[in-house]
Amino acid sequence: MEHPILFVNLLLEKLGLPVVASASQAHSFLQYLLLPHVTYTWVVMAVLFILGSMAAKRLEMVPRGGQNFFETVIVGIENFMIDITGEEGRFAFPVIATLGFFILLSNYMGMIPGFFAPTASINTTLACALIVVIFTHVIGIRFHGVKYIKHFMGPIWWLTPLIMPIEIIGHVARVLSLSIRLFGNIMGEELVLAILFFLAGLYLAPLPMMFLGLFTGFIQAFIFCLLSMMYFAGAIEEAH
Amino acid sequence: MSKKVGLLTTLFLLALATVALAQEGAGTAEKVEGLRFFLYSAVAAGFGIAIAAFGCGIAQGIALKSSVEGIARNPEASGKVTVTMLIGLAMIESLCIYALVIALILIYANPVSSLIQGFIGLAAH
Image (cartoon, rainbow over all chains, first blue to last red; front, side, top):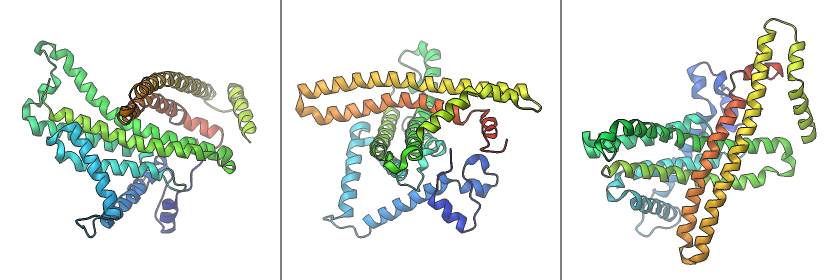
């Protein structure tokens, strides 16, 4: 696979910093720090920060413009979340909304030529999935204390030696499934776009795939947040 | 352009073992074994993703069929049915994505991939 042209990498090379194209060629810590999925995460962070501060600069009682749009989106996500987790889950809303915005913007950045989607690297998606699953256990311990272990024990007490390994494997599988689902979708999309561009770029062949990429980017961010809400709801409620 | 790529790929794949044997140097037997391993993994990757896509297509077709029937019966519930259908489709698609990731690992993150790249001159071996 040939190396794509990435704008931030070019910018950093002009500034004289050591930039490598992929993780196998990185040796020093600075080279690991300036890998494309890290630098483009910074780009996503900067864009989200600028958008958020623009929307919340002067809060008005009757919102207009950017504040109106963001209020609609955030209230929509919050109502959707309260439907699933119940009233006690309201404190976990900022995590879900932040992850949702981050993943959505990262997916869409892959569609812009010259930019790289940070979620197209297994490192970013694994980090997001680990945050969700570890927060699930933290919520469970905070709500139930030591009795959280009853979530793993199954309905009948003498089935526990059978059910507990299955539940633990299920929790590990949650990490794998969340990360690989997001990674596979976005990486597959980028791979198809790169190959189509290589084969028939002059005939605008990647264009239909880009529309599909917009669609799947939104759906994957939505699915990630939906599954996270369901895991939080499962940790908050009583064991069956 | 695409015909040239296809022709080159076929020639490369067919001539893999013979060209490897024709190379002089130490460790020829290991190189042949390594290249044969990559040949088998490439074939496995192709078949793996094909079978996964086949199963995924049937499953998503069944999900779509039921949801369209639901909308036809009760057009008022079309919003909820559509959202549920999209969630279900994404869940089914993720199984195919797992197979795709394995296929990508077999082709691009193969243990012998540095050997292959050194062979065709893309990277130092």
